[in-house]
Amino acid sequence: MDLSTGINPHSYPLFDLPATALSRLPEAGQLRDLAEIAASAYGAPSAAHVAAAPGTQILLPRVASLVRPGKALVLGPTYAEHARVAAIAGHAVAEVSDFDALGEADLAVLVNPNNPDGRVIEKARLLDLAARLRARGGLLVVDEAFMDVGPIEQSLAGDVGVGGIVVLRSFGKFFGLAGVRLGFALADQLTAERLDAQLGPWAVAGPALEYGIRALSDAGWQEDMRVRLASDVKRLDALLGKSGVPISGGTSLFRYVSFNDAPSLFSALGERGVLVRHFAERLQVLRIGLPGSEAEWQRLEGALATWAQNQRERA
Image 1 (cartoon, rainbow, N blue to C red):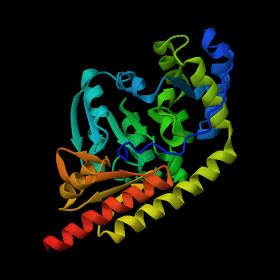
Image 2 (image 1 turned 90 degrees about the horizontal axis):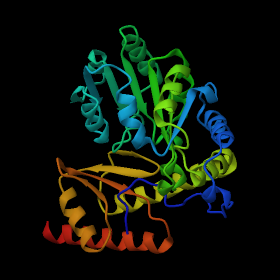
Image 3 (image 1 turned 90 degrees about the vertical axis):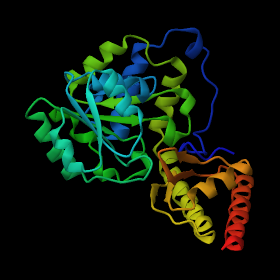
C-alpha cells in the first residue's frame, strides 16, 4: 500500500483510445488543441504561452538553461530535482530557507504549494521577486505541480506574459495518471516557442494527447474531485489526530508531519506494508498520501492504532 507519492488515488476515468493514438504519429492539430485547453484550464494568457512536454521532469533542465550559468537558488526544503538539474545546466546551486534570499539569484526556483510541506508563497511577493530578477536578466521558476488542489488565486499562470517567469504544471498528480507522462511550461511567447523547439516534433505521445485534452476539458470532474479530496484529507487528519500524530502542513493530496517519533511511525507502518515518504536528511519528517479504497483506509487505521498503542505502552 503506497502512500508515499502524493498522486491522486482516484484517477481520471480510463477510456478506450482511438487506434490512431498508437498507430500514427501525434497530430500537430491535437497538440494545438491541447495547448488551448491547457491555457484555459490553468489560466495562461493564451495557447501561445504553453509548451507541452512528456512530463515536467523533462522540462526542468531545459528551463534551467534559459539563463546563462550563474547562481541558482532553490527555496527549500523541497523537491530535490530542481537543484540537481540546475547544476547540470551549469549553475552554482544552493538551497535557501529564506524567501528574500532568492532575490540574489540569476535563477530562482520554488515550488508553490511546496512539496512536501504545502507552504504557499503569496502571489504579490512572487511578482515582486520576478520583477527584480527580470530587471537584471534573471528568471523565476515556479513549480505549481500541486496548484490544482492549492489556492488558485496565488498562481502565476496568468502573469507569465510579462516575461522572466516560467510556471510548471503537472498533469499526472491531480488527475492520478502519472504514467501518461504529460506536463506543461507556461511562459512568455518567445520562451514557450524556444522550449517547443528544443522538445521537437511529436514530443507528446498520442495517448497523452487524448487523455490531456479530455481530462483538462472536464471541469465538472475536476470540481467534484477537489471536493472529494478535501473530504478524504479531512478523514486522514482525523485518523492521524486520533493516533497522536501532529500535522504540520500539506495539501489535500498529502499531509506533512514533523515530530520526534516519526522514525518509529515510519518503521511501524512499513512493517505492516504501508509505505509513506520519509526523508533521509530529516528523520523527523514524513509525508503521508491518501488511501484509495475503503479497505486501504481500514488498513491504515489499524496500523496507526497499533503504533499508537505501542507508544502508550512504552511511555
